[in-house]
Length: 314
Image 1 (cartoon, helix red, strand yellow):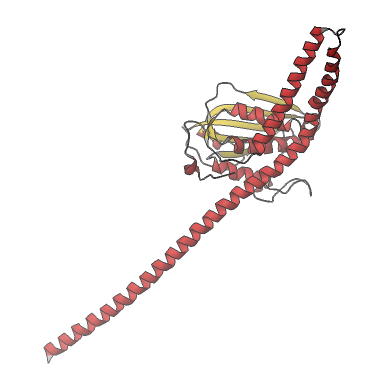
Image 2: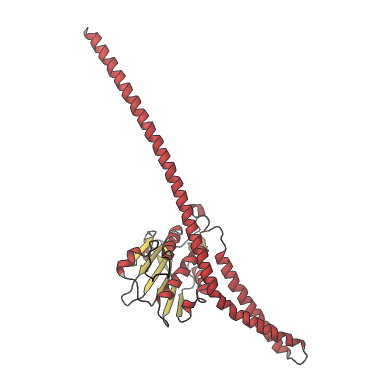
């Protein structure tokens, strides 16, 4: 009887443990399936978010292209008027009484004005044309100069002094030229809008290190190691500055310190997104004497595969 009770107890224990194990296994299997579904949903949501971010960057770029084109109408009008006037004068060269040297001089001036027109239009088309983004070594001084071609034709700059301090011989920065240009144009226009008539906007470039990504009143983007080589672009204005209580929010979507109707508050938020795509940092500094400085810190070095940056079309 005793052995029978023991055997019965062991059978009962085995049956109970087997049932508990099977039930636990089913529960774990169901939880794993639920986790897989959740992971799949998160992956899909992440891809949707990346697509939405790229579309937002591109839509802002198209909007800024329209604003730049409108401002460049005046800039294009001057060489166009010169071309038309020179063409009228060139018709006189058919007469034998006209000095040949004068005709040649007008021909050279005409070719120069046409080249200037072509350069302006090509710059605008290159900026507006959507294409595959490519993070590669580039000359930031060249990108700054190309950006200034756009903004100097805008009404905000017509009463301002633009100071350049572009250090020659900088190491190449790792960035996508079109995306970096988008950030620079936004920073330059913001600086011009903040500056009083007769004020100045200053653009500087220099080589740096990872510590430059920490030197500011507010920073977003990548945290660099101190020993990392960087290239730094700074845009400074002579405006009233930014209230310190607003610094923590200036890179948030739809936040703006401008008046109603003067902006949607997306410019700096999109700059933030772009800088993160470029693995850089974006800082703002408010000097005690007023004004504001926006600093772009980019890695310097060899090319980075585009897939590693998570960038598609922008």
